[in-house]
Length: 299
Ligand SMILES: Nc1ncnc(-c2cnn(Cc3cccc(F)c3)c2)c1Cl
Image 1 (cartoon, rainbow, N blue to C red):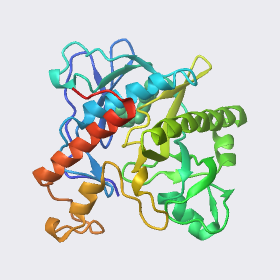
Image 2 (spheres, helix red, strand yellow):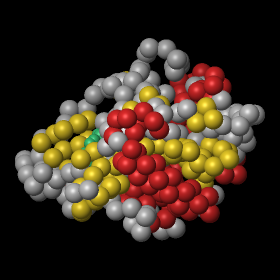
Image 3 (cartoon, rainbow, N blue to C red):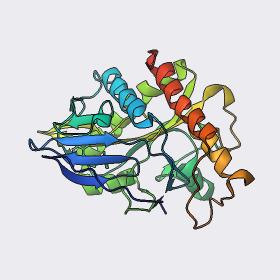
Image 4 (tube, rainbow, N blue to C red):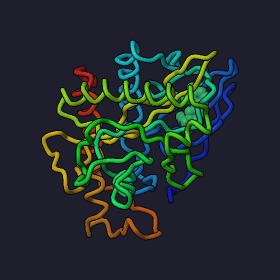
């Protein structure tokens, strides 16, 4: 169950209609019927939105997403129109706000996996398949797959996990042509991104895209290839057979599961505030991910 300790009240901005509060992002519509995506400094762990914010997280991940959109522009167009702040928006939205084309969204989470873990591993352990795709024997947590696979999911109700579905089920829902274009584009973009990340010492284990259509053209939407939409693993610590350390979340996970937190992540109680040191280390990991991937300094 994805829990908020305290669900944030949407900020009122003249001319903006608030559409949705995600775990770590807000979505508005402006007077020109464009979408305004605002990334917060909230962090999620163990299916909870933590009560402590991570300074600069929203800004770093928005700028990383913009960098990826640019790297991928030859493969697929994207929904970003501008990064200008809407008139009357709070100044602290600067750098973490995207003005996007409103698309006819494909109601499928387009997931690509190059490695086996999480919900894919759970399904594999029962059936040796993921989303109905047969995989070889002998894979374990963190195993690299023989080739990246498209493992779509349907968006879950608030607080539930997305549900993995087969490619055939996707074709039933959106039609064979859209399903084929979704799979082909998802795997092409993942293939390019995983190479770029691996050259920078980061394993892109899996990632989730959202696509929409604009006048018959498939457009890459939402945020892309951030540690919130993807699993980033430090390549030098990769060791199949156990849970891999998360590039950005490991300090938080280690503290939350240590006696020091006094918290049980399998229980019903909400998580405690994070210590300053953990917050600072985590903020620095987001900046490190940005600097290593983009090869630009985060000033
Ligand atoms: N370009 C687009 N056109 C139409 N719809 C969307 C759209 C709808 N929902 N989401 C996901 C989401 C949920 C919560 C906060 C967020 F910022 C984003 C994205 C987009 Cl990005």
